[in-house]
Length: 311
Image (cartoon, rainbow, N blue to C red; front, side):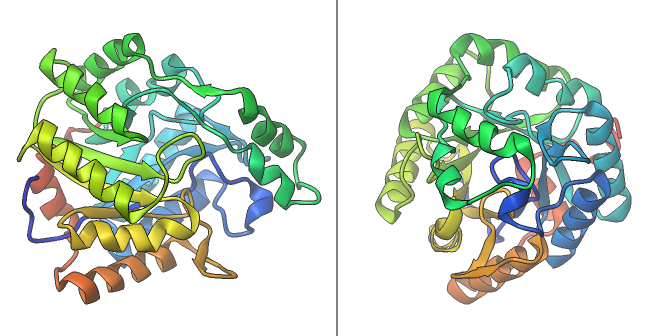
């Protein structure tokens, strides 16, 4: 694993998992998403991971005009690395999800390393009623859903990253996805150093446990040696335990309302910034390391810089 004396904190601002009924604090409009991203950067996040939503209903979409508005607002308000999703929502086709890269030519974007079942249907039982009609159907529909990222999809998607100078952050939902990444690296479709985001606790992917995170890092070490860095996402209540473990292992952490709605048991987070502030505090207390600035993050990851983007 690559060594870095700072810790990179990423913030996933709104995502495509949680729905408006689940929290009144989930940002929906472009203005809200951008404001939350800027506040998260001010709190210590050097990367802000962005999705967009229908501004009337909160449904996840891939509207390029909204992506542009959010990216431009964030770039005007802070110097964090703007990282749009190419994961979108699990219901979206890869061809739809990748369009944001040629549109914005960002420094970095997420890139999923394989297909999985992506179950959100179990969340329906937690709510007696939903604010919008689409929510229950969206969640329950994942009972029979494959989040598609086939080898052919990746063979099509990865050259788009390369064509626009955008670094892919490799979203790894299970151990097999690391072997997918090694296969793509051997074929020249990926280049080192890699930056891997371990996504843990999604129903259909690897479970969110300390043992599993250790195993993922061990496998990545075997496959990539000192040519990778990693960050970790712990879904829901696992956000801070796994984030703390990840940074104590020399890695990095992602927090945000995409992944977790709660600041502590029974208490909804009122903003993304609250989640970032807690992760920054835990990082400093547990490791003694400072969090990386956006400039330090860009240098470590070898990003092209905000001036080279198309927003």
